[in-house]
Length: 356
Image (tube, rainbow, N blue to C red; front, side, top):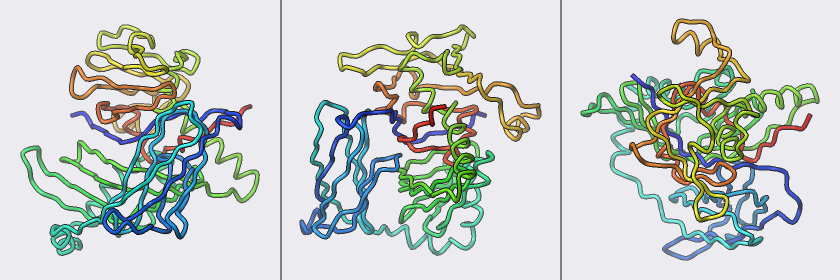
């Protein structure tokens, strides 16, 4: 049985840029019904360390390098979060306004509360493994407010299904990579402990290093987490640097593939369609497997990390930009080693490895 991992992430390359490449995003956040401003609402660029809060008039301003497409997320307690896609252009200033809807409390919330003590701890343990993984970094990652997650469970035609949703952002501390992570968890699902999915928006905040020795260790861990990741692969794919970055691609007949075999240019500049038949095997040759991953299959660790990609549904495709941003991420299924590495091994999209 394949273990399936769906993640709603936006993959974007944060690269070196000059001051003239900065773009400004400004706007206002209001209540959609009363039209009153919402002060202290959170506005952030999904998956990055870039974020701010609105002032007393509900206004905000953000600056970011113009290196690709971004999702701008707005969140305020008691309201439904809102997301807007900002596509890369030559424009240097944008105005984005948000009118948030009140988050109505569903009747099922009462039912969840009544059964929380009975099954909640069991479901939470399963969620942590699905969400953080079981890598070395997962052992250094802590969920600080698990009480905000509500779980429901039921038997369906697919099997035993667990669903979860958080009433407020999850607060996560990753001491191995030196980040605080805030996650707006929209949905979590586990079926028979074999398949799982989650949808969420992430914001990162750096934890200052205590000294230079710790700073060096954190940077080493971050670079290791970045290299060989799905994000790193996608960026290498669109840049046609698979070989240089240590990647080998194979189709189901074990025939070697190149970037041009998967990518087709579109009429839009710096945008490609990724399509392939069946399952594509991705081998990362610059890092070996972790011991515990190999032990799942009762063998010793291999010198390479192997992941598998599949399009869902079949004959669908993925739209990518020059920085590896996926416009339709739910059409890509990932398993193998990338299934093993989860939120605990994520670095922000604006992370840039230090030059050596």
